[in-house]
Structure formats: structure tokens, C-alpha cells
Image (cartoon, rainbow, N blue to C red):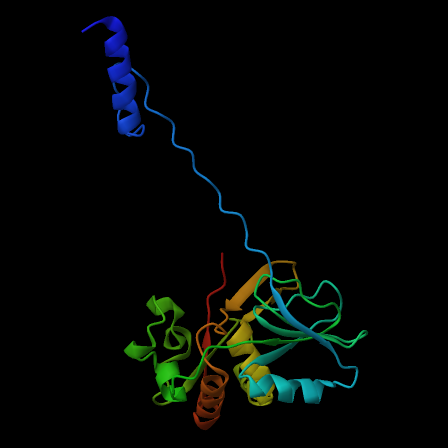
Length: 228
């Protein structure tokens, strides 16, 4: 076999192995990793209705099994797919998760379909919920729910004051915490995330059942340890 034929054979072998193995003294072919481009947002419908109020928009949202978020300014951004209302123009838009959100108005965030889970099943972390790791189950922080609901509080907080504050919260406030989590910034400027969001896990009906179940249980507190 001539040198020329050998060179051709080497090139064919290298190409056939697609760079996964080195051949004929050549260096392994570098793999190219392509970064997928983000999907464009989709606006599926747009109407104008300047008569909508928070109450009427909430009623509209509930008919599709969603939960309302409000936006104070253009910095506001809704959680995911649903409908958004621009308060100044009256523009009502149905959109995908990646579509631009309306400025200064309201959004209805779509939730999963109802699977019929009870509040007790959700709080106790029933196996059929299939939420993943045990740390993401409600009972990891709030107890099993069989005898009491456990409310985590800061080490220096007054338990009775925190119990009263929790019991004084509206159903809407509890639904918002369950759906969108609890996040904020402490007095020293440190960001905190005390509870994850479950709007992708439970339906509106399931979260309402959970709130009803929480209201029926005795309330206990548990201190979490401060980070040193």
C-alpha cells in the first residue's frame, strides 16, 4: 500500500470514529457543544378590557384554575404561563412562560390539573405525590400533620406572637406562600428563601384543601438554628 493510500485510509478511519478515538497518530477530534437557543415567548391572544378590577380578574383566573399575582411596576414579572392584565391600557394577554409580562398590573398564573389530593396527603408527604427528595416534602419542615402543624420560626422570635401572626393571615396569604414560596431580604441585607414554590406541583383546589387542613390543626412552633 502506498503512502498516499495509507493517508486516505487514515482519514476515513478518523472520520468513521467521529473523533471518539485517535487514529493513525492524529489528535482526538474536539467535540463541539452547541448551546440551545432560548425559546421565544408566545402570545396566543390579546384583547382590551378597561373594566377589569382585581375582584373580577381574580374570578376570571379561578375559572381556569389559576392564582393571581400583582405587579407594582414594569419591574414586575409573573411566575409562568397564564394571562396578564396591563392596568393602564386594559390590555389582556394570554402568553407562554417565556413571553414578556405586562407592566404594572395583574397576572393569572396557570396551575396543574387537580389530582384530588387531600390537604392531609399533601402535608404528610404521601408517596403518590412523587415530589422528589424528602427535603421538598411539606412534612420535612412542618411535621406529618397527623397531630399538629409545625411553624418554623427564628431562634429569637416569640412563639406566641408568631402563632398569632400566622393564624391571623388570610387564606389568600397562605395560598400565595404555598404557590410562590417565601423569599425576601433580612434587615442586614442578606437574602433569604425560607420556602420553595409549589405552583408547578399542586392545583388551586389542592392548595385550598391544604389551607383548610392547616386551619384545622393545632399550631406548634420550631426554632431553626441561625447560620454561624
